Image (cartoon, rainbow, N blue to C red; front, side, top):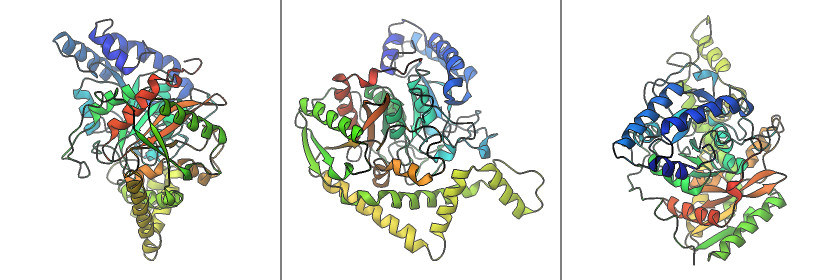
Length: 483
């Protein structure tokens, strides 16, 4: 059962080949056996999972037949889950039990999904390797000496190791797509505002977006269907109808215009990954797509702009964790200033502290115009580049990452080298566009992803392209040895 996709599980449950309770017990046993190798979970919710599975079986017995009814999933540990520890991978929130469900959690629970647990992540979603978690590093099931990507590395590793068929994740600068590429999964960052951020602990509010991680585009379509929709509780949620994402999966790609930006093939790209990208272009051409070279001239400014904007917003968002209202509090503070300093100094890890300091500096008097305001202007130029490109093409294709997954610890002493790994993904967040990464081959036994970008609210188009590609390739069917 652990090798089944979400779509196969839905068919199996509908055909009464097994029950949701049987499936849940099987996967919980598998997690207990195998997760110590990868460390993909922070908290397991066995009791809740079995309650939800039994309830799903009752609903099916009464004639319900939803695609997610009885489907086991995990939630990245920044989605508030009522009565369950929601830690954000940080000592700061180690003892925090959410008093309510995030909208994403509530919507998926209403659809009948079964929550097996909360997955590991970079602390406060800050990282590209899942090495900054208070609960220890997550390991890549494809090679346990390598990183799974971040910050949604726990969700990615759990799905790749076949501990569950799909999981929720979030993407601030590539944190769904990059782990998907590193672990041979399909990961989708929806349009900003498509999925509610209410109850999703914030890193950078104008960039964060929740989305699905799964093995196939078909599964991502099912999970996104359950997650997406307008939420009046979230002021950034967009009141736009949610289409049936599964309905367009089998549309023909004949005449689809795919743009390949010339800026993507710079000296920083591993030539072997470039080869995988060209292979995927050829495969899509065979399916009727028309390939066109395009230009995104301001792409080169994305990393410096992002690493001003995101830390600035993080500095503001994380100011609430002060040792007074909730979260970690130091012992025996001498006075209020000592309480603030020590609670934050002891509660936050090194990477979070680094980004808070950068963000505070960028927002400080005398530097706001020089850094933050200028970064926002660059952000607009990047968006304009995409708007111009989408007048000529329907989808943009390129690498998801410049390199395959690196060894654990290899970039610990050079944060900038890790930041540069986000070169291809952060532009989608700066512009608010939907982006998808799909498996496209291997380099030295490690998975490689290809990224697709589309205009606003065209997630269905991305899923359609990825699904057609997956019907004609088998990269997404490969399983890491030992799992």
